[in-house]
Image (cartoon, rainbow, N blue to C red; front, side, top):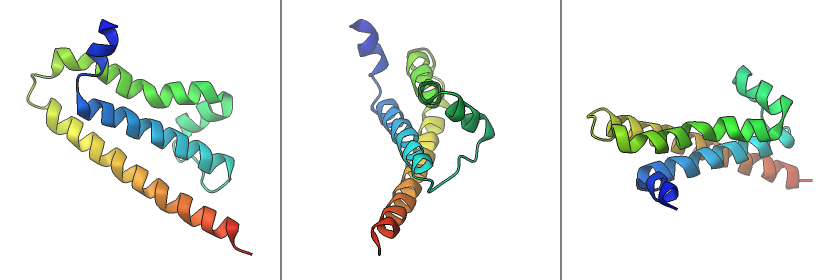
Length: 110
């Protein structure tokens, strides 16, 4: 279990992982319900190829960052970049909530 302890030391990285997971799930739901289209052509290819690959690709960034964090956390640029990344993913997730709510509201209308 020391690996898990090492990965989950930073609350910001845990939040980033959760936001990335929510982004992947909401995008998957939106694609399945035909509410959205994947704008990134590379991610679209992974999604069309295999769903498991899509999720792995979407979640690999925060996992690798969690593994690298103990070695790079002392660098002055790490914390501001990590904070900015969390803000960007939080904004993306807020956007997902908006279109998902809008789409489900329209789907429930007569």
